[in-house]
Image (cartoon, rainbow, N blue to C red; front, side):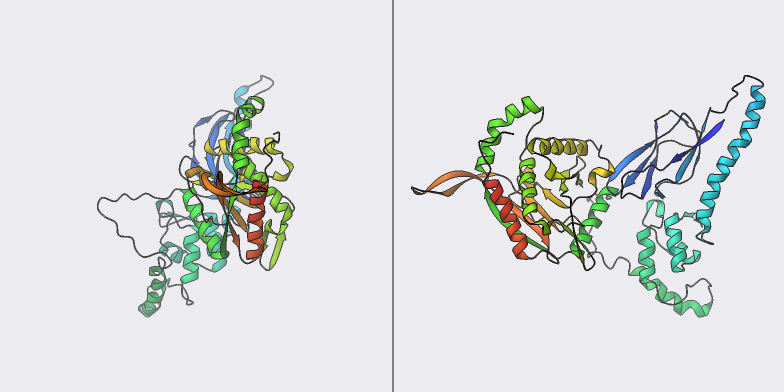
Length: 447
């Protein structure tokens, strides 16, 4: 028998770690090559990790909800490799192979033990509770004793203490030493230590009244991450929103005219989204200071134009796949990228790289019949545009012969931007430039 390490795979340039969300196999289960062994999560994308070989899962090195660094072993699989090759004394060969497998297990266990030793005297389990390596490392760095850890109310699965729990505890605990001894003189010190615990829910809104017939639905992991990201964005960036109405009659008529031929020639359905993205990319080239991020007191001007397109998932959650270097695509290329990303988002088939590196985001609220919206900036970007529904309206049309009233297709563009680095002039001129490009769309162009 031989043993193979199942390694946490690399899932993108900026992805350094992943969380194990579910083991699909248990110790002792037989595994086929390329069969999925566990599910992992990075930010918003869930992925499955396949087995590199056929064999038996003999040891899990991490549990569910634990964070594992890319490249670290997460399990050990025992394979049939290493059996007798010369046909002589197979039983003896098996005996000599067994000791070879033990060092492999021992090496991995030593790595895990070494990581645990970095947390000094804080065990993985205490009083029946499990503590992840991340929580134990934070406890070590902040001088949190095991007795203090045991006293923290955990919000994770089965009452586990999460990173947020321990950071909240550290932020709110008193400056005195932890109350580890139940001496009577320590009683006054215990009260101040307990008060921050009771104050933990303070940042939350007022308590919600729950009726007998009300249903309580726990947020899933993705919804919690979206909520945290949105709150963080509003806390970091002072949002300002500018609105412009655009006449998109030429675009409406052109798409109606070519969509059949486009489908026949390209095998793709052309929507309004790639046309909007084309106009946004042109405007970003005119106003490159929209394509930036904030790093402390520095402004990072992005060289690449990577457009994120917000997509609603069947679950009701939101994800933002990214068209990298969107300025390098023509309208046909943009259409194919938009359709590909939207389809894979709906089928939960996006890869971590597909949602990384966005520099500007567009969200089509008009898909849901909304006239306009005030979108929240997708950090670390500094601006986002919402495109509203297209509606027929009576409008004044200017001609050399005079003005007259006609029926036009119009829509609102909503541009939210970070007032730390984008002032009203830049934010307003940018959204107006996008509208200008949409209104100047050539109704006779080819695709």
